[in-house]
Image (cartoon, rainbow, N blue to C red):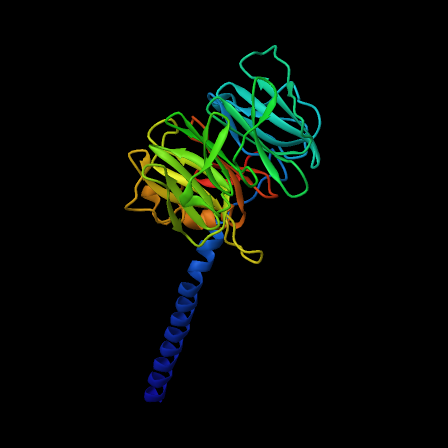
Length: 357
C-alpha cells in the first residue's frame, strides 16, 4: 500500500511540474505580444485634421494649416498654438515662407490666388500677388525669394518668382516645381531635375537630368534633393546621385537634440506601397551639420536610440510609422512636428508620436 501511495505522489508531482512548465512556456511566448501591446500609443484628436500644408517658419514662428480650411495656425514655443487673426480668404491649398513673409495659396485647383503677409507687422493685411496665370499649383520659399509653379497650358508647367508683388516667369526650367533652396548665394529649384538660378534663367544640373525631384533642402555645406527613390546632393563638383529604393514624399527636415543647437540628423519622409503599413520617415546621420559622403545609409527611427530623433522603435512603428509623412519640421524649442496624408498634424512629445492636440 505504501509503495502504491509513493508512486501516486511521484506521478502527481510530475504532472504539476509539467503543467507549471507549460504555463511558463506559454507565458514566455506571449510576453513579446503583450509587450508590443503595452507600447501602443492611444490616439488623440488632432488640432489640425486631414492633410496639413507644409510646416513653414518665419524667424522662430511656425505656420501650418489644414488644406482646404480657411485658418492658419502659428506655433511660438512656450505660448503654444494660436490662430493667425487675419485670413487670406478662400480655402488654403498651401503655405510657403521667406525670411520675412508668409505666403498662402488659396482657392481651388484650376482657380487659385496667391497672397503675402508681413508677419512682423501686426497691422499688416494680406496682399495679393498679381499673376497672368490663374492656375498656380505650387509655392516654395527660400531665403528672401518666393517661387511658384503654374500650368501654362494643358501639358506645360512654368516656374515663376515674386518680383515686388507680381509673379514673373523664369526661363529654362522644366517640370512641376516641387522645391526651392539657397546655398552660397545661389538658388536651386526642383522640377524634372535640379536647376540653378542666375538672374531669371534656370540651368539644369546635368547629373540630375530626367529625375523628378520632389523635395529640396540646404544641408550644411550643400544642397540635397530627393525623388524617384534617389538622393541627390552637391553642388561641389556636380551632384552625386544614390538610389535608395524607397518612395520619398519630399518632406525634409534637420533635427538636433536641443532644437537650435547643432543638427545631427536629416529626416526624410517616405511612403510605402498602397498595401503597406510601413510609412513614416527615415534618418540620415550628419557630420558637423553636413552630409557625410561616407555614410549615406538611411536609418529607421528608434533602432539606435542614442543616434535617433526618437527613443523607441516599437512606439514609432505603432503610431506615426503607419502613416505617410508629407511634412516635417523641428521647432526652435526642440518639438518635432509631422504632417500626414489624412490623419492631421502630429508631434513628438513625452517620448512618443501622437496627433498634436
